[in-house]
Picture 1 (tube, rainbow, N blue to C red):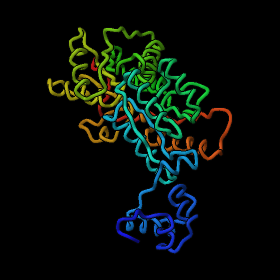
Picture 2: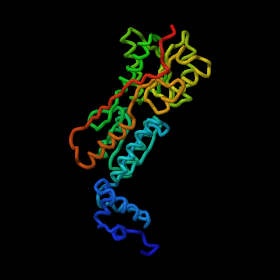
Picture 3: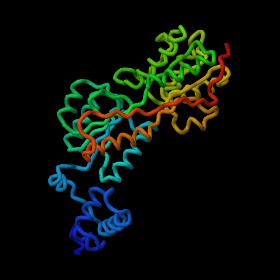
Length: 339
């Protein structure tokens, strides 16, 4: 082969001792090719510097072999875990992820979705269902498969975890330890159905015991550790101050706990702390953080499975909903109320 000529499927087939059809399958549907053959084809393709012409392939097949994923933020271990599992599953089936984030801005999400649709993605993955009707109309017009994560509306495939129940679980745990005045640090509630559901779950658990969560005991913050510290500062100024503080994501709870410890407040002896998500670091803090396990990696793998089943024509017709279990993880950051 001339050093200036681009490698072709024919070149790879000849060099790897396989047929052009096998090479084509290895490039577009690797899951259908024997592992040893697939590895041999890939090694030859790398050695020859082969780069597939996706535009030409899309014209022939009607597919781009790309999946568009729009998440609220890339600065999150939860979304990163889900994306990692999706990438592994889609890559092994010949698809590439195109990832965008919108930082909880509905206009930015709509713009990202519009660009992905215009790029010809074969499917879309989004987080939650809280978005303007105009954005839903755009999604409908695209007429491509859609999978929603964490929360979702009927009529579209969705992988769900019960955010309301997560709030209930963590609040009941603290109530069972005798805490009556809780503080809550949560994300911005507007256009965020996951955060809204978690706060509503906390309120519901309190109502079961005849207790109330006034707005003065809820601090809305960006979903970062530093914002958790800011929220904790606000709550600690209350008189009397809460004996337990819930961060509706672990990052907020971690920041809050750091702030209390920095002020010399014994944790959990004077103030207990709990989160929601169960990110890896929570087990390694001092004290380790009580939290609710929300299986982000499983959300990603189940989302990929749903999308692939749609693209492969295995599932057609009515929308599919996968409900994943959640569980309370009790660690050392919570104890009985000091009062």
